[in-house]
Image (cartoon, rainbow, N blue to C red; front, side, top):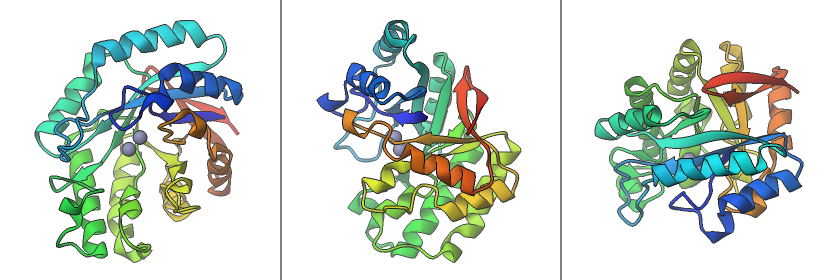
Length: 266
Ligand SMILES: [Zn+2]
Ligand SMILES: [Zn+2]
């Protein structure tokens, strides 16, 4: 099994329980075949309570060290989760993507319309339907402006921050445009199992319906990730994500080496 979405102490929202050594050792203890360390870089993050910057030199030196130290025991991909936003932040994401060598880059949206999607600033004046719509709108704009990523992170993450569950009709049209664009550009999606930690259960990101649509449209590149921010969540529900992939009719999961997909038969 592969956990291709892990945060360590380099991420602003992960603490001491997520030192990179603890995370890697936990993955080895679980017998995972491989992981991607994907710490946050969210340039111009809209919630000023957080600095979503990344200490790049130290991050890469540490990745080199853990690959040398644990690389015999587990396959470790050098990754990053880039927080996209229209304009200057996307330009900074593009610079970050080319400044250092990566195996794997997740492009994610954590801020839409200039506000962090988990804050009152975003939801004030928007009902659920509008909150979902504006999120997807910004997401489409981001992936039109910025394309230097390998998989789109947690496509329907906005559902974590609204009351109730949106109806598929509220977003499926624009989600399809996004999925088609990803497929045309040879990009993948991830199945992010953090929904189980956020009380959304089997409404994973993506949902089985969105995943099926991606496959029906011709998509084949799907990674699996827990989005763990502490050691005890490493590998959580990855078996569930693998079953989702089988149920959607795919026989492979994607891993990455030097930004190229390496498909692993399930
Ligand atoms: Zn994220
Ligand atoms: Zn993440």
